[in-house]
View 1 (spheres, rainbow, N blue to C red):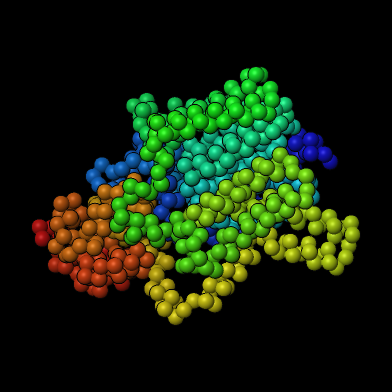
View 2: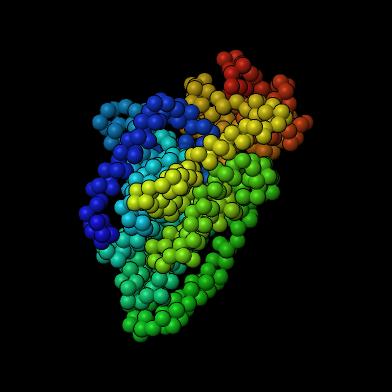
Length: 599
């Protein structure tokens, strides 16, 4: 079957394969009882997303992104997008209307939304592999792809954070561009997906930029063949960016610059880039020769660079440049996904195998294609995204979520090549090489090897330290007593912020979000200061409860950092006279202390 025919006749087949993979994925999670529904595993983002959805359904405005129950009085503005809140809210609303049970509706949404995204991502991975390496790559990509998506963990039930949406949209943009020469709307859809993933979060800006540069470069090299593709991609990027801007940003904020969320700066850059690309490809004189195309797009790049430098220079700095040094030391430096490859190598060297081997193998395979095979446009698209994602993962581990997924495409093609050789020229050597290709390509094998190595390398001190961590610190049942109490302000470490909002009516100061600087610093001042300083903060900000989970790693870190501080004393069992231990929480994972009135 030719690739052209595949592009028009295999959608149903690929959707069916993706559906089977999704059902298998759900079966694995169902056999475990969907544990994430009763214990989010300490993932504050997934919990706070559901809190946002609840607020939206309760009447909070579409343009109002305040989290009123976190931070100082009045809350703070979150940097997330309503584009993710809306479909989750729709599921909750529809199921609650049908059943009359909001809790059931939320549980359905927590299972259905990640599963839907898993299925869609699998569809586009299958489509990409088919366009990249033909029908022989379909079986390998289903196995290797499903294993990779399961490993990266962003599609598990309860995963309401935006990274799964962004990965799906980025893979979709890649898939549509590979098919763009066969199906006219595909390039426009690729631009649409690129605009949406950028609007949802700035983490994907490197991938959107890489796609745009690759589309432009392909047009320079092949003006006649890539002209309509580049034009339609530009129109899709600019048009959808404009639509998102006017529907998610209030008119009063159109002039505001937010470097960490979709705002004027991202809209201006995306619109200029998209319209500029479409215009360049539409002007016959500009696209007549390769040299003219290169000059025209070079001028467009200069215009974009000048716009950024002159209008939004603050957005060229590191996203954490202005972060308070205390928050960087006590919070950011301890977020696993924000670590660089070199920090990971120093702290958790065994994790390198789980996060970097399959992308690195895939890059080597792409390099081999460059030197031994005829290079194709689909090779350029896959290689650029894979390399950019790998470079991002060197900077921050979170980039490996994308590099592992992109690596699936060349790995599936590699397996398909050795499967074909084993079938056409069966020999012990070809079979062994095929088996080796399978083993090397499945990320979970490297993950298992990494875990085994980590267990073997653990020192006694490390084991003792980890033994003090209590996984029940973030389980739903842990917050039952707190949820029964009248609403008040709770003083707690940032890792407990989102669970408290999710499982109770209370408000908190701290939460692991870079925009909540004032609230996080206030909590640090209370916990790291003296009892007198803590008492002053509690009184000034009308705190009613203090929450403590001794096994929380953040609590242990703060107590270790300032051993004579308020939190360290509380951890040692020293309760000041202005706090009253709540009897029903004595000995529980989450200890609660009521602030005595007039103390």
